Length: 426
Image (tube, rainbow, N blue to C red; front, side, top):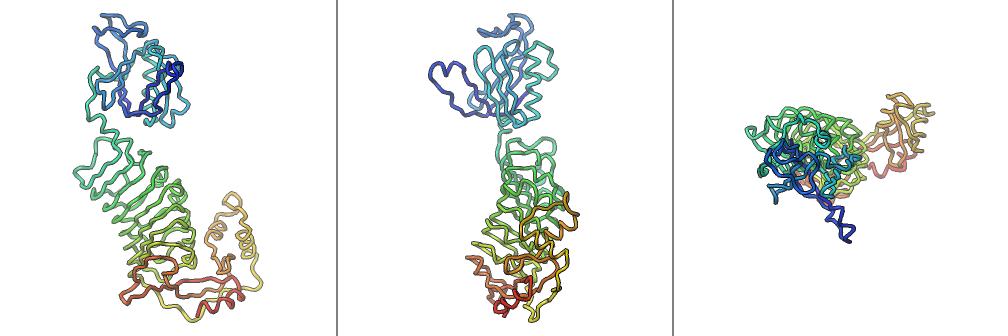
């Protein structure tokens, strides 16, 4: 039985000598080994390690520099287990002789729990049913499980019978013909970069949002038709910085997409987008935006709030601004409209546990007037033209005529707001 993790062996004599331990673990393979009957117990080994008789299991810690490893007796030799953080892949085993603490970290939590259970049995002298390893040097291939990067670019190289290395931080599986996200990938809790480009994936599981350290997600050239609300509201809100959804079949992104506020790079080229999320201005960290060759007729009003370094909107079907506005004003305001404006203006918390779900949806999709106030269904809608250089330092021409202007839709909560902004609409 083996466990792959980081290990630090700390001598409890060091503080008495005025010394300190390194404070840093090394990658190691822990093995529960069956000792040969002829093996001679080390000085200070636990009781029961008699010469010539059947020997109890021992613990062997091997590293890349010391493949033969260091052996520790277990039977009656463990003073205490520290397992408060075992769910985080951390634990400490305190031995009597030698007086050391074996500190384990970065282990698979479920594997760590199983391993410690067997170590407890060995300590008590009980029969161990788990398969024991021989007392032989660890093969270099064992340390491949500590790999932090794996790149697979063909179907024949894709692992079918074995798991991905647990410590992976960068995984690329391109051109592998995947039609769904492999659930084994979702167990890689250290993953920072996931590249699934050039496959046939149609839908993303919400459990991708459980990859709490994921910073880069590449889904270029797949068959996606949507990006779910569940992903937008997952832990990706705090971790995801780069997202590539190019060459898919996405027509619309949910309004909750703008909750991914750590995004700095967003690629949406070659989709079927008919609109941006109208709250896109909330992506305050966004610096690179590419949405070329889509079907965007205009940009949302909050697009003006972006501050980009690079913007590419080439090849979209931008419409010419209409001369006459769309007027949907009501006097007096309905109770629903007045209540919604009050809730949003005063930032009163709301949720489906307080008000009906359809009212939450209405509040989530409320328009923002150029004056900063909100409106639900009572507004004036107008379209103006914006020079894209006002929001981006570098702008790719939007058409073959050398243009850098695009139509922007604007909303006005009242007639007075519209009149005061007439110059903008000219």
